[in-house]
Amino acid sequence: MSLRQKIQRWTVQAGGVLFTQVGVQGIGAVTGLMLVRWMPKDEYAWLTICGSLLATIGLLADGGIGTAITSMSGRVAGDKKALAEVADACLSVRNRLALLSLVLTLPPFFMLFTRTEMSFGMAALVVGSAAVMLWPVTSSKFLPVTLRIAGELKSTQIMELSGVLLRCGLTAIVLVAGWWHVYPAFLATVASIWLHAGLAKRGVRQVAGRAFGTQTQKAEVWSFVRALYANHLFFCVQGQIATWIVSFTSGVTEIADIGALSRLTVFFSIFGAIFHYLVLPNVASTQCPRLVRTKFIVSITGTFGAVLLVIAAACLFPRPFLWILGGSYSHLSLELPLAFAVQGIGVLNSVIWTFMQVRGWVRLSWLNIPLTLGGYILGVLVADLTTVSGVLLMSGVSLLPPLLWALGYAWSNLRWDLAAMNGESSRV
Image (cartoon, rainbow, N blue to C red; front, side):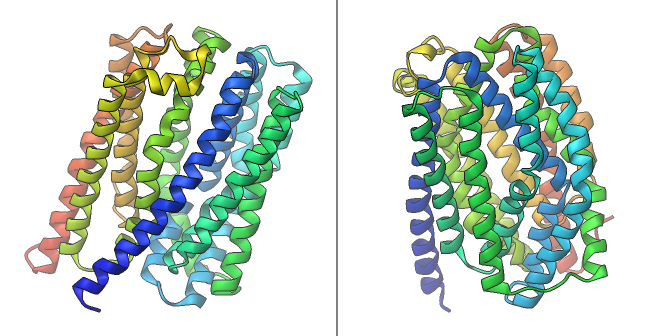
């Protein structure tokens, strides 16, 4: 295939992903904004914590499996039987991590719900419902990777679109019926995740068939888990720490403010979708170090440019963004650019770390923990944690040390791979 044909093919694929993701993110934004505008602040605050609960369960049940399935699938792209074996090996390891995930997650979140004045019975119901979400939450994360590596972009986009349409429809029914409570809204999310997971499972079986992972493959998955589980455990704390801090230092109003501002990540989601749908599978299967370096540079500069564009728009035109959130959040004009800056740093950090993990550069990933802790200490010293802006500032400061280190470490690995290709030296 000529370079021109490759460019044309990539342009068509990128256009299709962009078009679909505009729809997916747009529908997701409508769903979120319906919840922000219609739900009472205390109910919306609890729904924000519900989202954190599902995300934490997913991260701890992952523990590095998501990285394993991407890296291992990239090496066998084109071999459907091998792709199915990798998927089965990853899911079998997931099953063993499930109990640990629930033990680590459910007790602290139950305490968090009751701490924010949710009734004991409702807290028990929400936590119990989240426990049965382990299979769909993780399956909807792992299995689409196999489809993307296999080149089934259309299937994965249909899954996402189906999920957000179901959630939007159920949310609209719940709100129009006057059920402005956390549990009905939570069930709408639960239903959409089950649908996504079911479609993903069926899609993998149609594309790659059914095959059982080998012991060698399972051992390799466990090696990724051993290298990355501490980081995933820490990511859970890092990702939810803003909500937790506000829960203990302030109240439901501030939690709702943090949750509402987080809804605006939709402006970064489209760029992230293009990276995960097109760039990530391509990087996983690229063997030439020079091409990997080029793709790394393009990925980082493109993400950085997109982040700056969104932050500039928030600084110049804050009112349209706040209008989207509704009148209850119109007072967040000063916090808005800061929230976008923190989200942008997080997106850039995610791109770099995902790039490294896909390439298998995970040997020193544990350094993320002390570096982030150092960032939190610095953030605590400069921020007022009783305010939303102070919590956002602390979150942004905490992300800077691991971001700078990851950027330097990734570049060093790129140089080592190039040197190894040229026979000059090897990685130590």
